[in-house]
Amino acid sequence: MVGPNGNCPIVIRDDDINYFTSPHMLKNLYSLAWNKGFKISLSVIPNQNTFSDSRNARALLIPPEYRRPMGSYSILDNNALINYLQKKALNSDVCIMLHGYNHDYPRERAEFNTSNLQLLYNKFKNGVKIVNTISDKDVLVFIPPSEDISKIACILARKMGLFVLNRSTFIDTLKQMPFGTTLFGLLLPFYSNQRNAESFNPYLFKPATINFKTPSVLVSNPLVSNLHWTIPLWTLLNLKTFEATYNMVRILFKRSYSTRSGFMIMHHYHAYFYDWKPELSEHKLLTLFNQVLQFMDAHKNLWKTTIDDYVARADVINRTQISTKKNYITFISPKDLNNFTFCLYNHTSYLKRTFSRENGQIITIPELKQAIPYELNTKNY
Image (cartoon, rainbow, N blue to C red; front, side, top):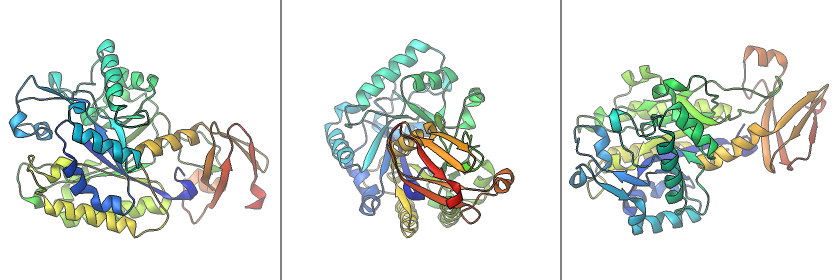
């Protein structure tokens, strides 16, 4: 389990933070979340390009008066936003992730779906440099625009120290890449062709295959090199109202909570200020979001975290060496790791994949010291 003490990781992700974002939009949207101790993972576009195709939903991340070609706006030029994000990052209320470079769509595909290695390198290098001025921590996670990325871009990102968060729908070139996940996700309603709030359609996610590299008696939900999920499109057919969305959130959350696997909500702040209204316009959508927050907050054993912290902890867990000999399991962690929790199953449960907290023994090791073996006698459990 990635969460310390076996707590259920809760992640809230917001995309498309750019030059045009104003602090009051984030304040209005996340006041309840921050009051309840949730953290927000913000995907930042370093140098937003503008374009004129207003018929495309992508244009909605740009205010109408800027929907013209050949514009480029650095987030660093929005001093009020930078100061606000720096304070929030310093207080650990947010983490800052890299979300493309221009968020552009040459050849009708997203900017990082290219094999031009020099172009990719320059965008990664310049994007990381800009985003690192916002937070006192180096950027750790890269989210491709539209989560559309080439295999070479994904490999380059990892070589440059970035984890890639993507969904498989657009990533047909990555079938041979190693992926692992413990994140459920829900994309709250984005945009619809009609303004009627009841017509919003949510996108729901389910976990991808987990790659286990631990002994058969131990399950710890490891992360490999990328966070990854898929979209079951059939869910779109039955979720056309806020009530249906809320009920599905409850079902997915309970499923994640029962196994302590991660749960992620993904949305876009500008959806709540439809077409860049100066004040919040989609009040029903905000009500839904706040209901979800209150529902989750009513549960104990939550780890309200950021994608950064989730990835960092999962990476340490994944690189922890685990060996078995007779009745003993030995752990050697590459870094200090506190409250490492896993579930011990018998071999029958493992082979049948009948994992649950009821048929396994939950064990927490309070402290693993870097490079110091920790030996566990399974006879004691």
